[in-house]
Amino acid sequence: MSAACIIIPARFESTRYPGKPLVPLKGAGGTARSLLERTLLAARRAAEVVALSGIHVATDDARIAAEAERLGARVIMTDSTCQNGTERVAQAVARAGIGDEIIVNLQGDAPLTPPAFVAALVEAMRADPTRQVATPVLRCSPEALENFLADRRAGRVGATTVVSDLAGQALYFSKEVIPYTGGQALRDVPVFHHVGLYAYRQPALRAYTGTGMTPLERIEGLEQLRFLETGQKIAAIEVEAAGAAFWELNNPTDVPLIEAYLARMGMD
Image 1: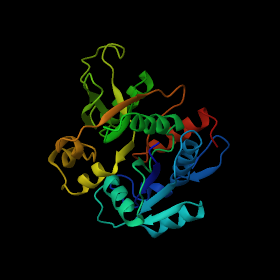
Image 2: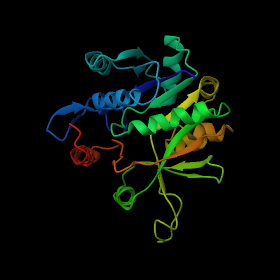
Image 3: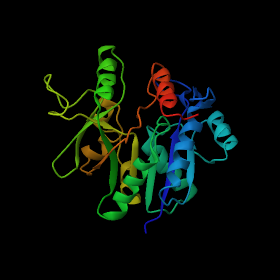
């Protein structure tokens, strides 16, 4: 069985939300935990359902490193010049000498990631050795689609949608809502939420860092487009939330939404 580990990339100087990893989020019982702590909890829940060799936090900031160490996480310091989470993960792998075949990038802004999403991703990579990069996609509920559309109406850059081919390979990712539905019912034109979670084999990760930022990656601000623009396929693994809500912390306006979801799911 291919060895796998989780790396959580976390930076302080976020363009849209500086200091985001340290933002407190109240749970169902009123307990406030930092975004980083809630993401670490998500990673640890995943480790209970799928075999992982370890969980690491990759950061360039001493404040985030101190919070990770307080929470008992292994910290790998990286450079502030990393352009995105994938570059940060790749640098962490190289600096720490991590030898796992499969590297899971659990975005530091996704505290609601269900363990089943991580398990599905790792199992999909283990089942098909030809897969070099994989990411989960989640069919939008009417509520999630309305959240997307509300962000766009307000001019906010929010979560990401994805379209795939008939073989389950991602065709494109966008901050816009794709495909264009023309007002058709959701059941007729499915919209898929791209979950901020990736699994890479090490050769794909190394190749990624050998390529500079690509045009569409720069325009959309989406790191995964570099893989597509350089000819690397990304397997889109469809997952189900099974009654759980999923949303990332992209903007300050997402805080009350995520806290409401934590309350709804009884997560303190």
